[in-house]
Amino acid sequence: METLKKLYVEEIVPALVKKFNYSTKMQVPRLEKIVLNMGVGDALNDQKFLDAAVKNLEVISGQKPIVTTAKKSIAGFKLREGNKIGCKVTLRGDNMYIFLEKLISIALPRVRDFRGISKNSFDGRGNYTLGIKEQLVFPEVEYDQVIKVRGLDVVIVTTAKTDEEALELLSWFGLPFRK
Image 1 (cartoon, helix red, strand yellow):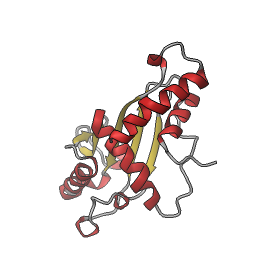
Image 2 (image 1 turned 135 degrees about the vertical axis):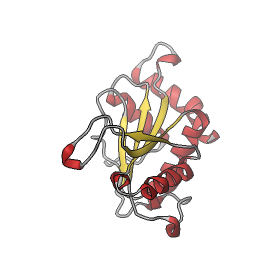
Image 3 (image 1 turned 135 degrees about the horizontal axis):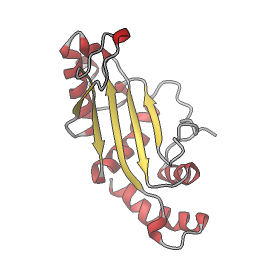
């Protein structure tokens, strides 16, 4: 955790000030939060799937997730407004840096056939979204405890104004982008 924060202050800020010609250090983009989301469609039929997902997300993030509910009813999915359909966690501060370091150094290298993450997943406002196909890439999740292998979404929210600035920031943090 300390290493990424220290890296940001000592190396990333001066490098980005130099590259993008910011007049003050406060203009340099920084990480705002990381949101982990796990959609559990099976929770409509059986509550144990949602409980297992909540437990997995808590172990992965080190923080208690909140259960998300459906905002609208969709007849095609047999979904009613207010049904519990997933869980999410918002990480800020030290927990955010701890998770990012774990994601970069442990989880992503354990993904099968991993060749780097896409540069096309920026949203136009400096935020990056990445999907992980199975929660087993995180070392805290034990294979025997998993009822069903499911993925999760990781959204990295930055204060960057453009995707180019966000790409540079995340590259400096060590996210392995495809060439």
